[in-house]
Image (tube, rainbow, N blue to C red; front, side, top):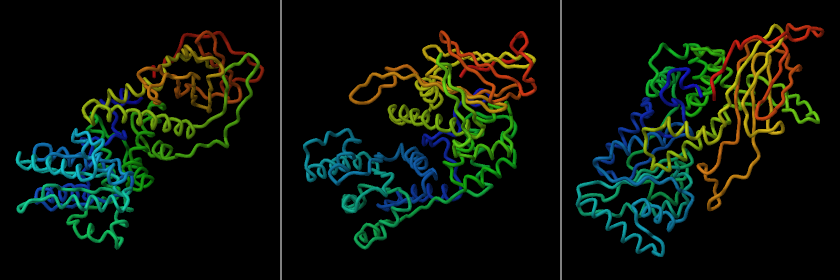
Length: 449
């Protein structure tokens, strides 16, 4: 969306837990060091507690990378399960088919794997993410796993990671034996203003940015305040800011843009929709910059979710984040080339929307910007109850355009004919009696989506 405009090689503020993007703040660094030291010292049980959005999962992936050559690791995040299902997930990650096995057989099979890894000179580390969702009986099952040991060392190191609810569960009297076995407890804290600025700079550099400061000091202060130091919120605000910056053709993100990017509420009360004419032209509605940003955020979340599915399907293999993002975007959004022609009193926008009718398109306008939204109603083919994206064509349009002149939002018409959307806009300076003059060559030609 904005990668080329800002000279980025990949999405810097995505949602996939890429360890390359881990910013080692004071508490993140302490937690990673403590977990590594605990595993190397055979401490058995460790825990990591963090609020949602603090980068906990990203840190766990970095931990796995650090252990790649010295340990075999199993990473589980399916935590809404019973004890048998939990064992099945563990064995499944080891490539062992557990169907039909009882708990005793599962214990025996896991013990065989642990001894095999020990003889090979490797530790075995089980990492359970989102452990706050585990029921007490499953937590007790995990405690019993720590009994796998020889007279000299532990055969299994266990890391439980979760939200603050995990700490509350572990504090309950019924889990006292498990709590007593946890020798290392790490916590991730929110970033301060200085760490927030460093976090943003780190992610930009990893994504390939090498120019002058992209965010002004004032913008960084706004982001630090509005995000409350939570990395996930920082990512969301920064993404929105870059989308808005590209729309406005601003090479530097100012405090004003950062403030607008922080707004997450859809201002639906400001929308005034016009009824469709009998000829079924594209619907036109008034909008606002804040609304366009919210719509962009929603689209981004859907693309990010699909990109994560691709990342997961590749076995959580990093290194092709940009390809995953571009593929996800192409599966969801239609490429829409746009031309803008300006005359003395009007603007004409022509957009290629092959396959879309007037009923599929909506145009939302603000005084200096415009958003084209389209959704083609079709029934995607299904496979085993799930949509297979590779078997369907993109069926949505989302384009935000910065207009070269201020227009009257109540004087807009839009019509689709033979795959071409034509939008007519009157400039504010145009009097009621004046008529648009003859068109002149295009003054602006926007990039394709």
